[in-house]
Length: 176
Image (cartoon, rainbow, N blue to C red; front, side, top):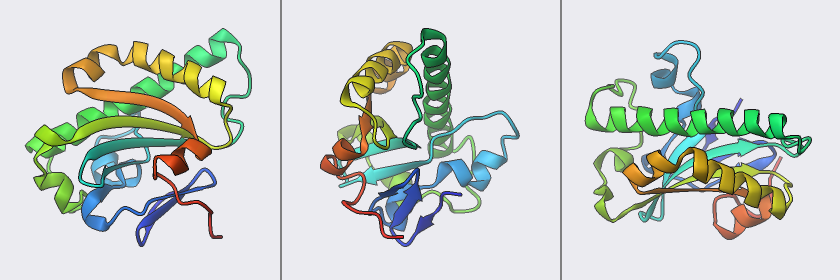
């Protein structure tokens, strides 16, 4: 089970953060998500990174893409698209007050930030994935999420753990 411990979240063999409690929302395990009922796929967490970027993060373990068969990849892309769309919608619904965060699970900075100067990005982080696989998945996600990305001025990218370190999404080593 993934949950923030202090400022880090351990997920799929990676340690995401640091993200302070004010700058994050562990949406996948939240009571807000559970209040929707079954059937709503959601990303791991949402965070405000460096007060400049709102990130929606989905993490996958090594071996997530076990083969390159088109039907297999299509099913993965559909699943990921649903996770990002649901997460964007639920966050925006809570932000504007249609869904109340009565459990105070959403960090205060996420609730009060002026998003007019903050970029939004959806990250799929696959531990140990090949750069070529990540590029192909990025292109597929950009196509399936095209309308949502355009409406909300978001970007989407699939990266591996090496790139996630460069983007400062995960720390350099996982402490177990």
